[in-house]
Length: 337
Ligand code: UFG
Image 1 (cartoon, protein in one colour):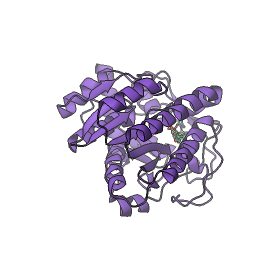
Image 2 (image 1 turned 60 degrees about the horizontal axis):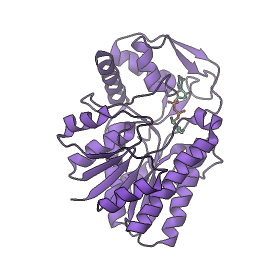
Image 3 (image 1 turned 180 degrees about the vertical axis):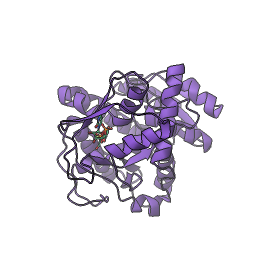
């Protein structure tokens, strides 16, 4: 059985990936400092999988604790999710973002080097492409100057990993550039748990529909898109979780020691389309208003997923209806609990 350490394994994408890893027979170890997740998620994972992964409340900026974990267990691979991820907050607190996201990555890589763990999957983001000139974006689309310190941590993170791969031929790493992960596990036992007022569209919609927020502000109705609102490539979190397992298998067998892939569906949906899908799925009318643009928003972006489809044999299985209905089922379960 392969031992996989999942950092940030109690978070939104991390927890769904842990469930898929267990289903595929991996032994999972979770390191998470609970800064943006809850310990209850561990029990939820156990409810779904009937397996309780080993859990360590560790801040990855603490190298000593991380090293202890690495040296106690014979780890084969690392999936590194743990990071701060709020774009706006990163502009206010850049040093916190560089420290949390980069020094923890360096600690992970140093532990890998010191204990000869040779596989890493890294959470990157389509934010590395900025607003591309041509759509859809392929992995060859040039990266652009990051719009925020958060985005920069993803760009620099990828570079650090690539440089390290170049210096160590035994080390294999893959960066996955996520588009917009949404939705929740079918069981509605795990999902996204935003702290405070959500920044992202889907939790804001579901919280508005359940009366927690008064109305949704749609940021900008005058973009150069068919209905004037921004376009994104939304991907179901369970599909994204499965992409990590495909990447893990690929890294193990690949001759290339560093690679990167887009993970999306390849389809773009506007904000208004998302709202209409929500209304159709829930049978409710959503209270929303089109307001000013949000600074820093990209107008439209969606992925070319050919590389992922062909080289990793992975493709998204779920569509926007599945994403929205599962996110709504999850939100309703939160209200009940
Ligand atoms: N939106 C609204 N109202 C809201 C929230 C969002 O209209 O209350 C709109 C945004 O303007 C955007 C779309 O919904 O057009 C999606 O916004 P999200 O905040 O859900 O997602 P982003 O595409 O802005 O950001 C996501 C991730 C980031 C990542 C970025 C990369 O949250 O971590 O994609 O492009 F960096």
